[in-house]
Image 1 (tube, rainbow, N blue to C red):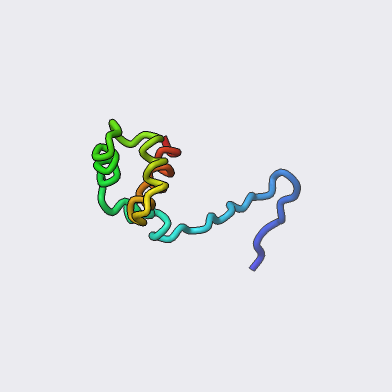
Image 2 (image 1 turned 90 degrees about the horizontal axis):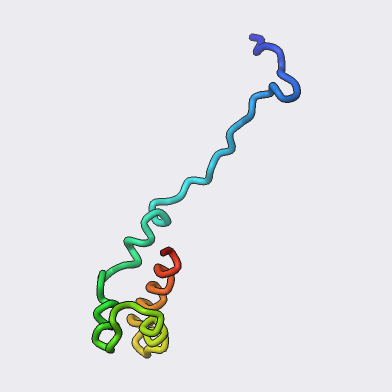
Length: 82
């Protein structure tokens, strides 16, 4: 069975490039990362900051508590989105 004549030059059909499919894990990383919404904000308020500020994030990064440190890193990442 013949397919027909091949098109040459600019009239040739362009093939669409297939995009790599993202797994469900990578699509929902933000939901997974935020386990306790508002917890870091409460930490900042307890330590005399008016909310999540650059100073509070810096203090959280220096914290010995690994959970607070992780929350500060996440807050810094989310500030970069805005």
